[in-house]
Length: 566
Image (cartoon, rainbow, N blue to C red; front, side, top):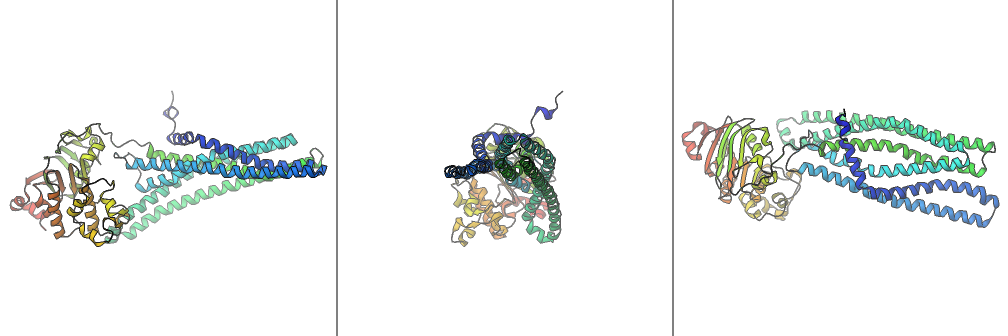
């Protein structure tokens, strides 16, 4: 019986095969040019031996001139073949690394998340360092073949002088590679672990940057720093371990290559001393013994790079072959913007039932913040439909039957912690550059004062994560982006928690006006937004416990009054 491992290739191996297959043309040309380079390098000491053997022995100016011309041709061939060979290979390497970076980024940007236990910092490391190391296979294989060509040419040339010299090179090369193959496996395993630890350290940094202000607020920055230092120290120790193995590998390779070169030189000297080879063949053998150290070094290092590329490919496979969290349906929402939640049970939600008619502005006052967050996650499809009980219907169709692209076009959930990107105010509000309601969205979100502060207006530069904006400005910018999307159904989660009361009143009025006739749901405890809504639903202990206008609830429900009064 065949095991699953033998039935299906390992994902990392598939990635390497894909990289090699689609660069076969560039690799072929690179191999030919680098093989020509190595053959030219090998031909140089051979030519010197022939010059000593013939030209100097005959003492002919013509033969000497021909020898010099031959050396010039060899040097020119070596120079041009190296230049163009490396140009072809490095272009293919860079292009292939770019392809894999795009593939990893594409997986992270897909509407349906993948079921992979990696943080954003780890994915970033995979998309950069691992993609580069995987693409190195494009250079490794041609250089490996060209180094083999140089070793074989040297072995043949020495074998023609004396069979024992050729056999010595072949046997010595096999022995060196056999010894180093053991160390290369350790390097591959160690590199994979090092990349994983560096990725975890990067993820920790990303988390700390996101939470830096809250950490400073309650004095947790020192504990966070100690946590990061621990993770970083682990990465450093693993890097030192890998560096030690690399050092042992390089030292062993250099020592073995030097031993082989010395053995060839001493054997050639012994044969020349006994008259079994000529002086010209001795010069050739000594020259080849010195030259052969470079291709042997390159040849012996290739297994290490192959193992590193394979380790990085295995890490990329963690992202590229991870299954989607959910498999969305192919359906499209029908006409109408009705939203219905039918007996949904998830997290703190307990058989939640509610219905928002098309064109209605509904506010949901959640007494427990966790319930509001759980509801927002369900509506944003951050929680797969199969992961909770009950049904969510958009436009009369179940969420599970709709394609994720159709849901995103029809229903937008704007989180309370909407991300701000490096760029400008305009690119943050309208990333695609296709919205026709940017001015209205800016006015409704009260972002007009931020725009007026700067000479560039909407083209004012925004730093990564909105570092040059206040908390209220970031929140209003996120709200403007949600309003500019102009979707049929808009869900806002606490859109005004960081703005002052006066601005909050204006935003509530503006949002109600701008969204009139389109379905809008606001998860909030803001009296201004609650008052602007057509009706208010009270969400307590995971279920709807009351429903009325904000003012009626204030007059009749003491618990509601205590929860939302400021």
